[in-house]
Structure formats: C-alpha cells, structure tokens
Image (cartoon, rainbow, N blue to C red; front, side):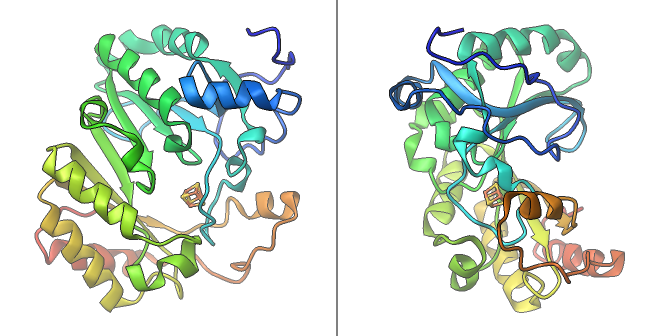
Length: 280
Ligand code: SF4
C-alpha cells in the first residue's frame, strides 16, 4: 500500500453492495487521487462481492466502484456517488484478489464484473483491471450508464466481453430522472454494436416514473436496432437503498413508490419481446 494512503480496517470484501460505506478514502491527498485517476494505479472501491449470479453470465466476482456523476432518483447505492466513500485499493491488490477466484470463476462459467457507482469514472483503473482479467482467461463484464464511453479506445472496448448497459428512460425524460442528458449513452450503445460487443440492456421499472408504455416502446425500438443486444433485463424498483438516502441526508423522492407487480413486469417484458428481443 502506498505510504500516502491512510491505513484502514474496512475489509475489501462485503456481503452485499447494500452495505452502507462512507468516507473510506478520507485523508487520501488530492494529488494521490488525481494520479490514481490518471494512471489507474489505484482505484476506489465500495467493495468486492463474490458469488453473484445476477451480474452477468455464470457465477461472478463483482467489484463495486465508487464515484458516479448521475443522480438517478431511484439509485439504490447513493453512497457510491462519491469517490471519497470508496476504499483505496491498488491495482496490484485488485488483481491479486481476482487471482484468488479465477479458477472458481472459470469452473462456474462466470467472470469479473465491474459495477458501481459508474466504473468509467475511474476508466484507467477499470480498463487495466479488466485487461488483467482477460489475460488470466477470465470473462469480463462492465455495468455502466455509458455516459463516459468516449474515454475508451476501440481497442480497450475489445477487452469487454459483455456490457450491462443501463437504458433508463427516453431522451426527453432523461435529465429529469438522472440529472444528465441521454445522448452520450445512446452514442456509446451504437459504438458497442458497431464493434460487435455483446450487450445486456438493463431497464429499471419504477411505477409512475419509467412505466409509460410509449416510452418503453421507444427504448425497445432503440435496443432492437442495435443488433448486439443478447437480452433485456427488466429490473423491479425496490426500496432496499432507501435507508442509505436517509443516512446520507439526501432528499429521497420515492418514499411512497411501490415496487411493480409481477404482472407489470411481464407486460414490460412483452413490449421488449414484441420487437424481437429476449426479455426477462
Ligand atoms: S447511474 Fe447507477 S450509480 Fe449512478 S446514480 Fe444512476 S443508478 Fe446510481
């Protein structure tokens, strides 16, 4: 560990990304953070979790990165918005952690997934870790909102076996829902498709917020046009992250929003299937 990084006792592994983690990088000098972002020699991670079966194919090791510049109203991990909340981890440490699991991951047809937060906030660290995984023969996936996709070269995108791409709503409603425009995400999606990278679209169904059938039709048509989408995952909104908003003192506007019913989820899946996509 770099001498300039304060020692800390929080373990890198956590049982769940729903564990609230804050201020783990407090005391790391700004110059060290800047160098880390420029070189990727160090990353800021909420945690590693093992045994995930929902973040890509097979059984996966998931590295949850800290830092996101979006502010989705339904975000269930707002503690990952700030990089300062992440644990400073050197690239070597992260690779060593991955090496512990590589045989098991391959045996279980799994791999490494980077999620967050937004992993491309730390694009150098992310791509170096994923490249190391590929060299070990480990399948690589990244869950991203796609907004910072321009930070990756075509060759770097070649290191991504799978992209779990969040399509959250239509361009017209995007800034209201996430705080950012949707254009860069759509551009990245088209680029992935052109480079023949595989995509799993992730769409979170939030009653009253993302459930307009016309909007869903628009998203479905965009995804179907990409020609690289292997599946669409329709994820139900839930309240598991509400306590984090409260603990962090952030105004939470979805206190009274209920999760969608199974019938609502099925109806949305049907809309994606109607344009020829596999949806679950
Ligand atoms: S992009 Fe993901 S991590 Fe960022 S605010 Fe939205 S849901 Fe949260």
